[in-house]
Amino acid sequence: MEILLRGIFTGLLLSIFVGATFFVLIETSMTRGFRAAIWFDMGVVLSDATVITAVYFFASWINRTIVSNEYFNLAGGLVFIGFGMNYIFSRRKNDAESVIKKRNMRLFLNGYIINIMNPSVILFWLGTMALTLSKFGYTGREIFIYYSFTLLTMASFDFAKAYFSSRLSNLIHSRVLRIFYIASGLIMIGLGVYFLMK
Image (cartoon, rainbow, N blue to C red; front, side, top):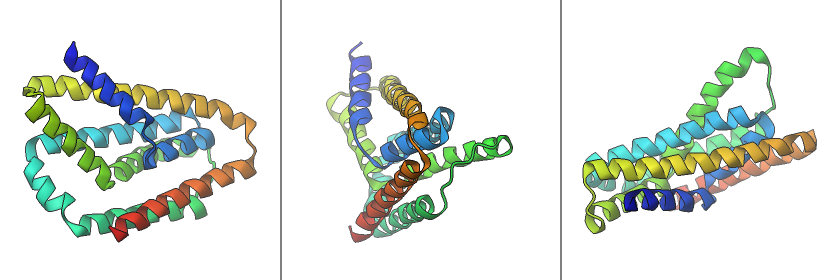
């Protein structure tokens, strides 16, 4: 029970953390709808699971080769700037039936890439893994339970954010939606510049 509560608590902390994916999730839900936001968030959750698994098996290599590597920050910064430019100049609301399937897969990949290219995400999961192994002394099975409930809690709250954000979309006209696109793009570009300057 203690492991479950710790996992849920960690998930709650991450749910209230305002990062790059938070803004994109809200923007996607308001401009593209609840289902589109869920596809985006599934990409985020899968990327978190990927990082957690990699950290568990290759923690020292990741810390040495990726986190401490200036080129990773460079790549991450350029990716964020690229996504930001796309949001400002190319994003349009398009719910045509013929493009929904393709759009959903692209949103899924966007969520995966944006999250996994964020150095702070890798550093966070490295920190929690060190805590679970050294301080808590969890076994492999206990680590699986802990992170499963962490990710489940995060996903549940993200789904709730997406749902309530999508309910607001009918009250917002196209000009306001365009402002959301530009704001999201500027936030992404700002994060990209920050990573480039680190």
